Image (cartoon, rainbow, N blue to C red; front, side, top):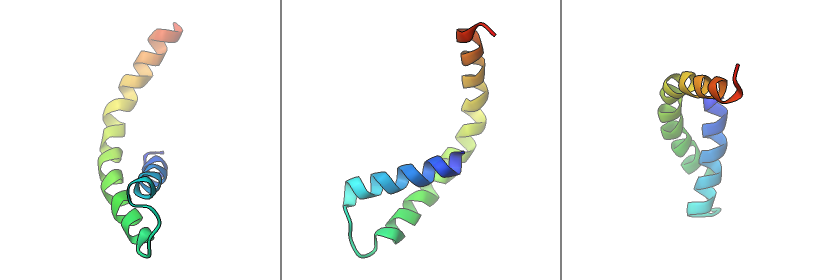
Length: 60
């Protein structure tokens, strides 16, 4: 899931910040590499925390 989210968000933000240009896909891939390098380890930190929080909020 972290890879898919990083892929979509990096593409959208690359387009918003730079617009469409000839090397758009290269810039997108580069942004994706950085985003996924951050997102993947953060999932291991925040997934258990968000799971605990959701269980507390829903009373399960």
